[in-house]
Amino acid sequence: MLKWVDIPPVWLVACLVIAWVQAMYYPAGLSFGGAWSDFAGGVLVGGGLLLMLLAVYEMRRHRTTIIPHEVPQHLVQSGIFSRTRNPIYLGDTLILLGLILRWDAVLALPLVPVFLWIIEKRFVEPEENRMRRTFRMEFARYCEKTRRWI
Image (cartoon, rainbow, N blue to C red; front, side):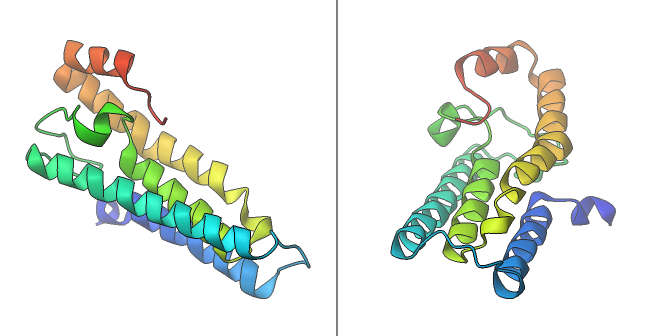
């Protein structure tokens, strides 16, 4: 059961709840300043969703799992995965940053690097270790040509 609770969307929702509570109840008189932050936030959220959709499409096309704790059947290197090894986690991060901007949650900005650190330690590094053991040289070549984030 804990395996299903410890998934990236749960961490994202937790960070989003903290950001929303900060924006609603503890604004501290700080603001990003109007329409530009609404626009930028919307662009970031849309970009994050697009990255995630492209990644899920590519993983489904290759018939491999999107579940973080499972070993993938195939190493996906095409589509969005030719640009970043972690498009779904990058999309999560863009959504978090975008909603922090939209909600004007200035004090919640430190959640972005905290979220990235949690994702990297709890999911990215173990996933890459599993892929390193499963795909060996193919994964090593993939890491040489494709960055972890951007």
